[in-house]
Amino acid sequence: MTTALPFTDPPPALLVEPVVRRALEEDLGRAGDITSALTVPGNRRARARLVARRPGTIAGLIAAECAFRLVDPGLKFSAKEPDGATVKSGATLAIVEGAARSILTAERVALNFAGHLSGVATATRALVNAVKGTKARIVCTRKTTPGLRAFEKYAVRCGGGFNHRFGLDDAVLIKDNHIAAAGGIGAAVGRVRSGAGHMLKIEVEVDTLEQLEECLKLGVDTVLLDNMSIARLKRAVTMARGRAVLEASGNVSLATVRAIARTGVDYISSGAITHSAPSLDVALDL
Image (cartoon, one colour):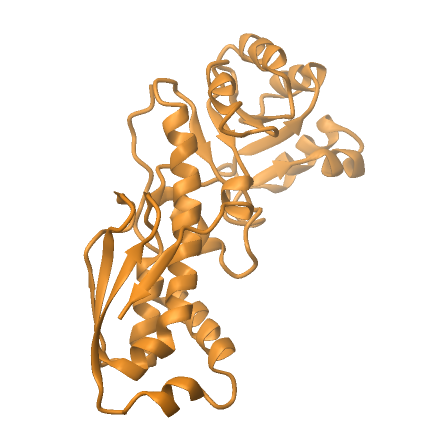
């Protein structure tokens, strides 16, 4: 059974701030928040709560705090729950105090980040809980919202999951189209080994047991078992006998994930936890 915890440190400010800044620029447009400017006196002070309207696992408060700070450095943001916490409906996640106009101007961008990323963390947590008692780890994929990959992969870690590769540049994953273009698994693996450094591991995606056997003979590090039935996954684990790390992918849901984990695979990858996770309802009460 896996006992190690995923690395949960948030993305550095160097990555967070430019993304949040672009989101604010998109929302403020050319004239800024004309509604708040026209309706709220400039000297009006306020205190607001970020509240979870549904139970879930929290992520993205770092981005929410950044949004308030970029709009008005004078705002005071106090987190009441850490990213990664699982909360009940009605829980106060943070308190924001300061100029009312500034709070209202940053509100939507802050909530968009907190709601979306908490949704990712909540979806991940559900899968992680479903495979408890097995050795399988839940991992995400590159099926992320453009521009938000570092945020969403952080949210996956907040939900107890682990990260697959971050991009095309940090790991080799030979997929079906690479195999077709290279002229076969052997040719693709051979070309990687002739050009890659000794520190780079090789993963190959297969959809048949015959391809798995070829990968095992070639000594690849990890094999991605794509859209295999439970029976084939069990057979794959028996065939591998620990000679390669096995990752199951495809048809992963709350209804199927435990059966997949019980086959003995090492990792279960899910694109849905990032590309299809419903946003957690997070609101701001002034």
